[in-house]
Image (cartoon, rainbow, N blue to C red; front, side, top):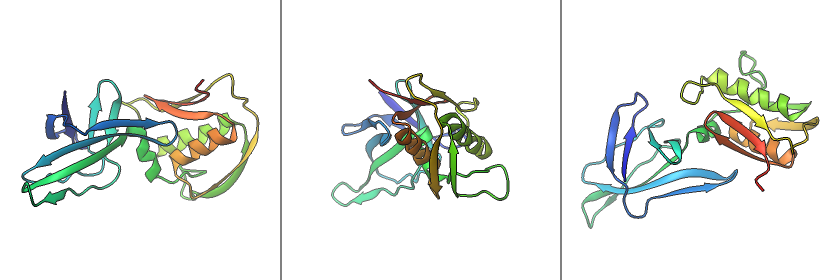
Length: 187
């Protein structure tokens, strides 16, 4: 199987076959990434936003800067490059009450049902210009989740963790598929 990493403009910057030791890891509400292991004689310095698309698992992006390690034995640069699921970049953005305005409160409380709280997530994503393949994000609340008002306190929390905290408060799980943020139960 081949892998191709593209820069944010869509231009290929690395391609090769998937090497031994590479893997995909998904743990609900904890992690969702692919780890690519490879070595190169000359280093390639990947940038935030570089990405790859896997036909089985979707799009993965570089969300944290990475520097390869020089291997003196082989004379090559060894990589263990972690590309996170596309929505994982939300961890780098603060969840704001009014993302569209200059106030942009980052610490706030809100007593409201889950659909209202999740709606603020959508407003944050829209204000950042985040879409999935040109489609705005939406949310889906499973019928097993009671959409009652709850008090949530947000204190400089990132957008992804805010989603996970909402799920905990409403006693459910949260996951993302394509442009849909799901709140439900994996049974």
